[in-house]
Length: 194
Image 1 (cartoon, helix red, strand yellow):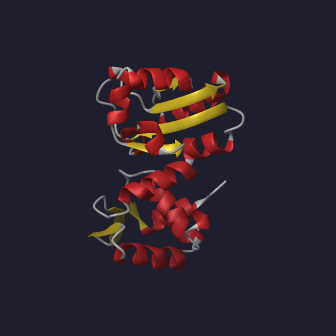
Image 2 (image 1 turned 120 degrees about the horizontal axis):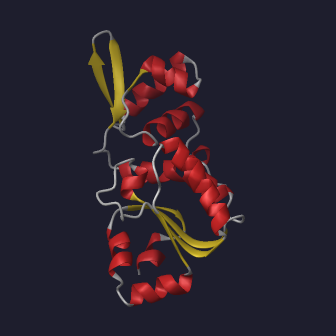
Image 3 (image 1 turned 90 degrees about the vertical axis):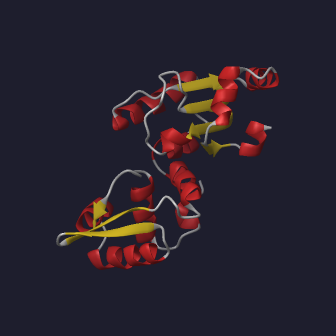
């Protein structure tokens, strides 16, 4: 499986990016980052300085501590969210267990789901899975993530035929899913939308 380490050579930077981009709302101080990543403080400080200089993270002094958070105006913000969604948590589990869950043509996470935002409506879909899927295997992986997030994950599974039919008929439910922001976990976004 492809990992961030294939693109980024610093393992400390990878851990920091995964920490911040899988918890977008969180603000961390240096010691908290050291605890979460289990890395040396000097290595963490060096990477934080680099990420802040590159504009990926924002530094904010508060009292005698310095806190860091993600800068959502960075040009690679959405790309980093998508990459981290594929290499951590449920995204990673789905990719690693791709053969167990069947033949998924597409697995898409909604933008709200990867950004850990609440759904506006209860019928909004967090995850769309298209293909021939072994439902008990998929449900098992999703239940684990639900317990980590302490909330229900709303997912929809369709066969490729049903997906193509609904897309051709301009089904409002499917168009609503496809109209929102998304992170592709498996499959190509261009093929999903067109």
